[in-house]
Length: 118
Image 1: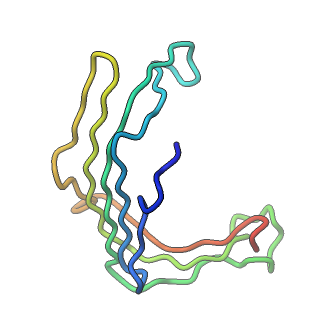
Image 2: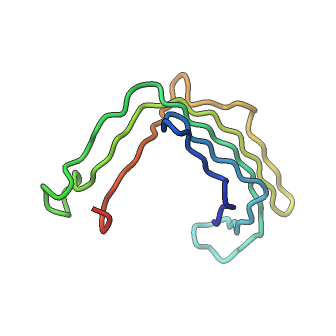
Image 3: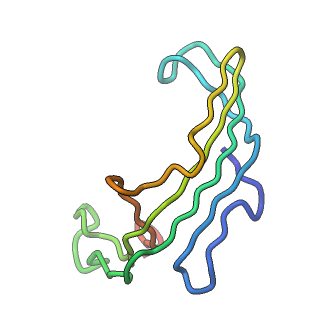
């Protein structure tokens, strides 16, 4: 899926991120990699707000590249709000407005470097 320029934005202080895309064309199917390909569209809006400080994670190149800690990142717990709608031939859906990761969900935001970028 290709998102238009400006669809994803991060605040200057890195505490808020926002993704908004409208009528993004997709191919849907009834089975994973199945034979039925159905043209569809999806619109979504997601906002993440950090709820705490960023914490450094990972060990970078100090461990073998196959080690699960072979990355560097800074992550903060977050709250997210979400709305989404989609259409395909004969079917439509729409989430409840303002769906949220609270109270029992999980959201996180941050930056990460791994693989060839280390």
